Length: 102
Image 1 (tube, one colour):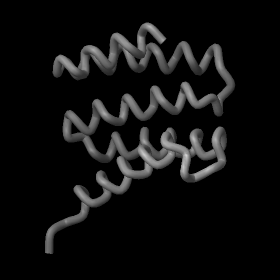
Image 2: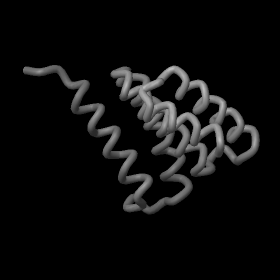
Image 3: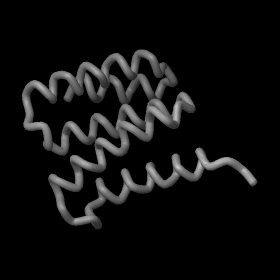
């Protein structure tokens, strides 16, 4: 949890590389300590996705958000759960940004 929060703080400061370091470490710890479908893993995946959005690396962000969405859906089931709704909104936003202009 501490690594996750420090990563979020670095993201807020615009220090994206440092944010990714801490968030990746948080993800590694959570994967070692929690089940693979724990919502806390999904929260960290989504946080990493947000950093990649900030860096305008939308293709990588999309991968992280999709992984988070899969875990949230398995953990909560109900598609109206706020974590699922927010993650799906992030995915739709990225896809709309990625579509070529006509």
